[in-house]
Image 1 (cartoon, one colour):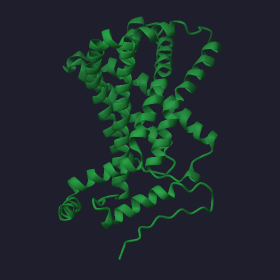
Image 2 (spheres, helix red, strand yellow; image 1 turned 180 degrees about the vertical axis):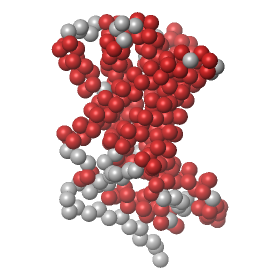
Image 3 (spheres, rainbow, N blue to C red; image 1 turned 180 degrees about the horizontal axis):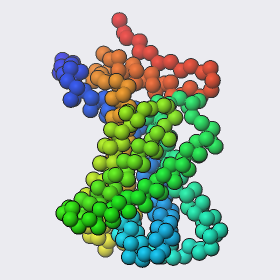
Length: 315
């Protein structure tokens, strides 16, 4: 058994097509990836309705003179399962400018939960030291900024979908057009959002590929997985009732969260050269040392504190 393990270990170290994915999986587990994705899912569910409601409210006021275009953009923004609920809530919003601004501030604050969860996950995956994280005011300045960026991305995604669909000569299926609109908006939001939320400096050249991968995965999950989940929810409705919709939304959000956390892990492993990792822990690699040192250094909380990690090999 030891010989088999040694051969497998040697093989994956020598072949990056195997060693790199294995290193990503280890990094994902080291960072408690399933828990990070679950937190983003939970806060994403709580933040989704305020964000959609505010998006519908903004579009309704911007396009008040064009009801047809307003309806098209809102339909592109809001998932079918939530359209009735969001429309009813949007119609109940105050019409007074002052009251609307106050309500909008409250909705933005409600939508910061998912952004803050992403902020902590992103910096955790990147191994940013706790002492380097900004104080709450600085952190929430970044978070609120990205929440506003996310709102703009939701509206822009709906607008792009409607604009491309209007070009009938393009000859593309409606679902593909919607995916293109979502992908372009998601790419811009991910690229700028990571740049803002990540405390450690990172050049755009290191961020655009992960942002493109995340946008592609997001578009696929939303426009391929969503119809499947809608069908499953419809079939499960007689048994689970209203809970079927909630379970479907949680499932969709969890898939999105898992995909985005995985993309972040791939980017960190590639940039930090955190592969190949050892399959046999008794014969660790330099990448193991770097990865574990990154985890240890993250726990430095006050100036002057130094947390070191070293592997003592048995003789």
